Amino acid sequence: MHALIVVAHHDPQSLTHSLAKQAAAGIIAAGHTFEIADLAAEGFDPRYNAADHKVHRTRATPPADVLAEQARLDRADALVLVFPIFWWSMPALVKGWIDRVFVNGWAIDYSLETKVVKKLGHLQVHLLGVGGADEGVFERHGYADAMRTQIDHGIFDYCGAKVLTSELLLDSESGAAEQHLETAAKLGRQLFVTLEPCECEAN
Image (cartoon, rainbow, N blue to C red; front, side):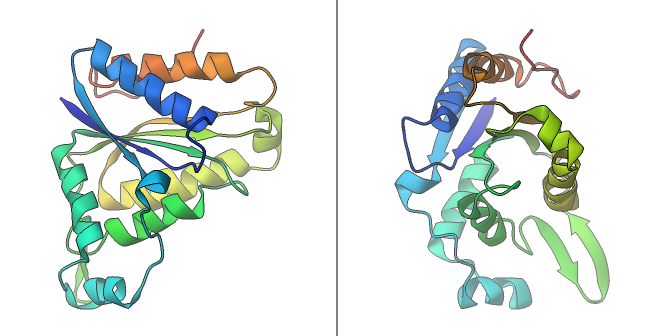
């Protein structure tokens, strides 16, 4: 089976990139294939523009860069999204990728006359968000629940994609990085083992 690993960080030496590489190594070890979409290095433009709006309103053909990203996803059985947490959410680069790629006519079918039809029921999704604050901060202020409501439910469930892993890899600047790298490698190894949610926290 095949996974698309989407990583969004400007620094190739970052923990975010290291996590993506560990997930990829786990996927290979399990006998599967992967592709990495490095949004920053590839220069993906996250700005939603008039052409994107036309896709939503009139089902116009998406711009070439969007079609290329959709083709990557069409080839994949699973999406692994690895991103740093900026201001208690995903970075603008990731949000813009979703805004432009998960469009009407491809991720959903929507019109004023009909209910939303979810079109990504075949796609497994695994989310790894990397944060510097500790778990207590996220739970105390409701940030963890807010992110899962916004991202897991509001984006992926809305399109019918199955979120099997939703991990916040926290306290990443205070000694937890090694554990997080093992978590990512374990996720990669187990990615296609089961359709049940992956218990991928390192022990």
